Length: 338
Ligand code: FO1
Image (cartoon, rainbow, N blue to C red):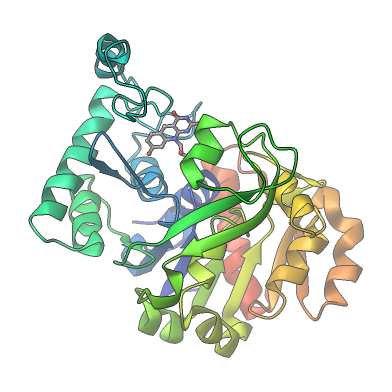
C-alpha cells in the first residue's frame, strides 16, 4: 500500500524509462506515492554483459535489488552484506591463464550472493526463456509488485568509441560499456556511442508506452542509459506522440552528474553538461523537465526549448525525498505542481 506523503493524483498506468542507480532510487520513491502494481519500469539492457559465461544484466539487477530492499546502498550496485569468496578464488587461475585468454576476469566484481542471480538468468536463457520472462521471474523472487521489463528481448550492446590520445586503445576502437565503466573507471575519452543491434531489436512495452497515463524518464544518463531505449525502433515516435504525458528528470545537477560519467560524456559528445543540455536532448519527446533548485536560473532557457520546467530538490538522498520527487513528477503532468 503506497504511503501518500502528500496527495498525488491517481494514475493507473505509469511507465518509467530506467537506467541503473538514479532510476532505482527514483522507483523506490515512486513506490511510496503510487501503486507499484500500476508501475512499469522499462530498463536499459545496453550495458548487459557476459562474463565467466554468465549473463549479467546490471541495470535490471540494480533496479530489482533496490526495490527489493537488498541493494548495497554505498556502492549502489550488488547486494548488501555481500561476500567475495568466489572472486578471491578466481585469483588462483590468473597465473595459468594463457596469453590472449579472457578467462577469470577480475576487473568486474561479482559477489557470492549476486552470483545466484546470474546463475539463474544464464540457466533460464539456456532453456530458451526470454529476457522479459526471466526478469519477471527474478522480480517475483524478490517480491516486487512493479513490472520490471528489459527494454528488449534482443541483444543490444552499448559500445563506446575511443577518442584520439586515449590510453585505453587506439582511436576509433569500440569497447563494451562495462569495459568503459568498470575496467577503465569511465576515465577514458570517447568520441561516439553506438547501440549495436538496436536497429533490428523489437522494443518491449511499446503498447504500454502508447497507452500510459504518465511516462517518466528517470534521472539516468541520457546517452548511455536512456539512449539505448530511445534507439529502439518505435520508442521515440511513441514518446513524441505522448509528449504531453512525458516528464523527464535531469540527472545533471549544478553542471555535474551525481554519479557516473554523464557529465564528461555529454561534453565529449558535443552537448552541454547542464540541465539545459539535458532539455535540448529531451525537448522532442518530453513536455516537462524537472530540474534541481541549484539550477533554477536555467528554468527560463529551458522553457524557451518548448518545455515546461519544474524546479525542486532532485537529489534523492533519502527515500522520502525520492517520494516527493516522484509525487512532483506525477503532478507535473496534471499541472498541479506549477
Ligand atoms: N560497478 C563497478 O564500478 N565495479 C564493479 O565491479 C561492478 C560489478 C557489478 C556486478 C554486478 C552488477 O549488477 C553491477 C556491477 N557494477 C559494478 C555496476 C554496473 O556495472 C554499473 O553501475 C552499471 O552498468 C551502470 O548503470
